[in-house]
Amino acid sequence: MKKLIIILIVIFSVQLLGQAQNLFSKTYEGRNLLNASTLDVCETIDKGYIILGFSNTPDNKQQICLIKTNQSGDTLWTKLIAGMGWSYGFSIKQTSDKGFIIVGHTSKSIDWGVYTDLFMAKISEKGEIIWTKYFGGSAKDGAKSLEIMDDQGFIVLGSANSNGFDGYNPYLIRTNTIGDTIWTKTLSSCVIGASGPDDFHTTSDGGYIIAGTTFGWNEGEWGHVYVIKLDSNGDKTWSKVYNNYNDMSDVRIKESRDGGYVIAAPNYIHPPEGGSTVGILLTKIDLSGNVLWDKAFIGGGYAYGNSVENTVDGGTIVAGKTNDSLHNGCIYLVKSNSTGDTQWTKLHSIAPGNGNIIVKQTSDKGYIITGQQDEGSNKTKIFLLKTDNNGISSEIIATVPIENKIDFRVFPNPASDILNIQRNDNSKVFVEMIDVNGRVVYQKTYSDSFVKIEISKYPIGQYILKMTSDTKSDKTVIIKSKCY
Image 1 (cartoon, rainbow, N blue to C red):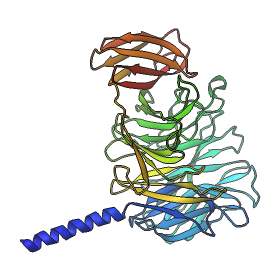
Image 2: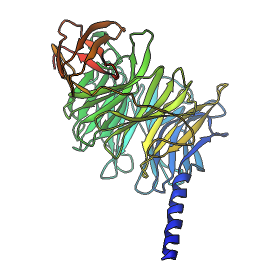
Image 3: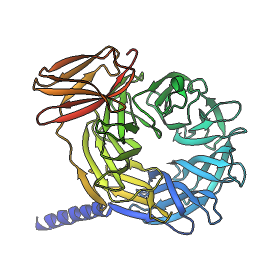
Image 4: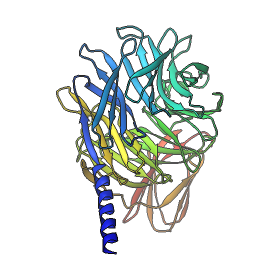
């Protein structure tokens, strides 16, 4: 019996040690990684990680870079992949043969210019090029993301500016296992005048979902979010614009485990006390694109959300960088549940550079975060940070406390004439509506659990609904529209 107890203690201790060793913070630099930046990361079959990005070469050209690590973040190999000219890698997936498929874009000559092709490459398990493919026309085309299909072929989302298309229209390429084209689609009728798409995924119904930023859409308005739903053949099912986002870019979208989709993007907000801030806005939409709810994460400074992922518990993890009065440049993680309510926020001491921050959940339910770390004097490194399932690592500097919020529901949202507010009690609460310029356009004190507010006289657009009681406060974003 004593031997069994000792054995169990040893096994438990080894498991704890393994878990502790799995939390790390690493940086990568060297002759082949000059001012490098990352654009994707994924956990590999061997429980290690592979980072995809780009790096300046000694002769000041841009090449795709790959960094393969073990499960502790130690480098196993680093590779540079050259296209025809300046090259960028945007998305990487591991294939069933333990190799990798990557997409990005490359210029068509050794000099950087306005002509680029979509670039696709199959890489071996050791980082050697097996084959490369180029797609595009006579102007500027490139790739943003890809998915591996059930037949082990690929679907690639890019942007097309060739063959008579204006702007950067979503461009889909379906290939077989060796990159030969099966079909292509350019969605010019869906997003006329829009900037290139930001995010793309296959959906459980066999179709696809695309998200991006409008540019010159809606009578000159720009910086809103558009979402396009496609069927399995790449044909449009529906498309919608979401005006609750303003002056933003870098949209992320994911299919929810409970149905529908979650959109996340930075959003400019002008608070009543003056100035401006950039928060993160999560929007849940149903299978037809109708808004179910949205939740804003508003800090005291600028908060950019570069990455959003579904989590195994049905919630969402958002990663980005923030700069507020207390924390001058750091990485943050925001974990929310399936209804968008914040469960925890963690800040990490890594000083981010100008590149994206990418987060993925790992097989042990923790998180892996990568991006560009600012070293000063125009010098950067690539960082890789591994946390546990609560966002904790050796780099953590703060846990942001969850505010004591008022439990309420607003519907419909968007609304045209009447806005309904449902609370769980009839305590006294002060209600304010604040427009995008920070002006309070409505304020009144209520002591009812159910409130109706007439909003037909207010201009179409985005507002912050703020509620304050003696002990609690809360706010959410509402949208005034023509109809709902």
